[in-house]
Image (tube, rainbow, N blue to C red; front, side, top):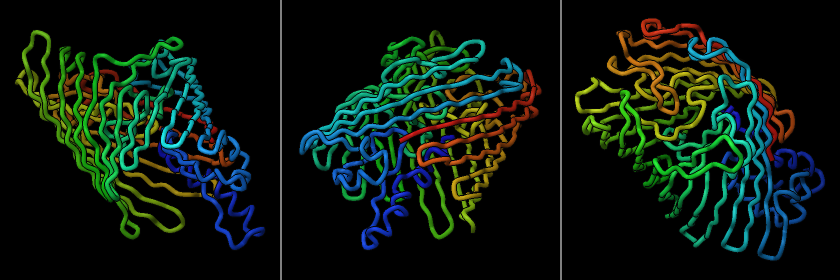
Length: 458
């Protein structure tokens, strides 16, 4: 579960054990706290373990800091994940019912030498039971997920090579962590720090995964560049995206799209919020169909209230534009570019294009090592002239003869147990019932999914 993984440090940090295990021996000393475990892994700072006494606090310490010389050290770690998903009424009955198993291993090595570092993370992703056949998102076998060199020049950090990228809450650029094969990019990134602010300058191409060993390659068709600034409580960004093989309305052509975004996030007392708006413009030049101007937008809101006894209630509302009328020379369908996987939950049959979405969610820490959540969701088409899309942006149900806006809705229950500081066991049950639009345009089976997962990380 992506949300559970992001909260992993709250439950799984070795530092939580250290405070209990060493307080009596040295009561005057504050226990060392491990950095937050992250999805990308390269932004974890284990340099404080240069102190050999701190490395002895937990069995993972000798792996997180391996001294080589006075100025050279190595950090290592891994993730081992097994995930099973059982689907009934898959894609509302248009795909076969199935139970499949994903397995992946993501070890890494992070070599530091003064102001320079080299980060390498191979991956092994395998799948069984996927019908009619596994895609590269399910199974990429053995390949390189990340491999880059970095130079720390004080206020500027330069990085070049293959790397995972996570911007903000991953509405436009994410790691695709939920599915089996994560997403990486080839290219360069510069991070400029100015006081409490930082600006990331990007020039990247996504990595196109393949089905055989070591066949992942840089996409020649897609490119991404721009700037993403992080300020206290605010993100502001400009991203340019090019796709030479874009497809809209059954037409393939060249897409050039610009995205300007603003995000506000923070907490005040018991209240927390995350509000983000994006405007897109550009053009789409279809083969033998002329040029269409692009004008699309989204507004996503998340407002929550922290409740007593480690509980939280959150309401999410998303409005994402769709195309108004085919053939009018204007394209209004929003493009989420490279969004996070499992976008609206563990079961996400509808993607972030041409929708209005309501998603209330309640979560609680039901025991010291057990968390749970309940969520409901409902989807409407933003525009009657456009259809329904999946998370990658593929049209999965055209507007056709459908006139209704209501796509459907359902609910989801999740539970996660942090069995040890490194091992998390989790499960989810999700249901999505088709609404009036899906009944007007095709198959209408209710989709259910049971997800079971074991994730070992250090």
